[in-house]
Amino acid sequence: NAGVTQTPKFQVLKTGQSMTLQCAQDMNHNSMYWYRQDPGMGLRLIYYSASEGTTDKGEVPNGYNVSRLNKREFSLRLESAAPSQTSVYFCASSETLTGGFSDTQYFGPGTRLTVL
Amino acid sequence: GQQLNQSPQSMFIQEGEDVSMNCTSSSIFNTWLWYKQEPGEGPVLLIALYKAGELTSNGRLTAQFGITRKDSFLNISASIPSDVGIYFCAGQKNAGNMLTFGGGTRLMVKP
Image 1 (cartoon, rainbow over the protein chains, first blue to last red):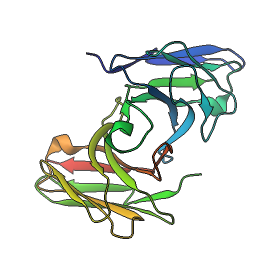
Image 2: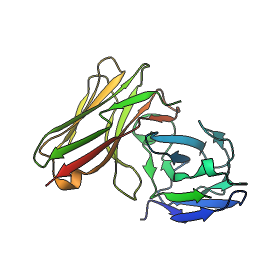
Image 3: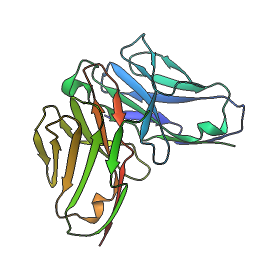
């Protein structure tokens, strides 16, 4: 039982390149999330998927797209990377979004992205 | 934008000392969570609080849900070197709402 896994662990891109960050969870969770973490800023929500087939914008969605491929997988795409997108990206999942303990989010190990 | 203020931003303490950190907000949250992040890893949930005034322990860690629902506190007793990391608070206003995270408290422990 791996929990939440993310690939790749590290990535360096040039400005304008595109890439997709992959996330998978094996906890049969319904809800999944993408965050970015910048120094001193805590975690900021980019997009989330409350359940398979739905996605919604979070606090900082500009420059990103997401796909909830199936119940297990939730990918984050940068179509044209910019230096401002240099960050650590975390995927998380929770059982549901209905409140209480079932909303508890479990995080993956992160992807460290540098855009030159 | 970020609505949770964590303090202190960093702490450098001697092994064996107790640690206190807090998280405050200008608005009410109905769930408070405390996470720990070690270098190169994602945040790991330590304690979840669901009721105002609630006091919950997890080993040497104790967290409290402030009575006003605008703050929460985390205490670590008798710190050890493996307590090193960044501690984040997170609040949820209502069921179905997203988490709001604080900026983190970086804890360093000197053996």
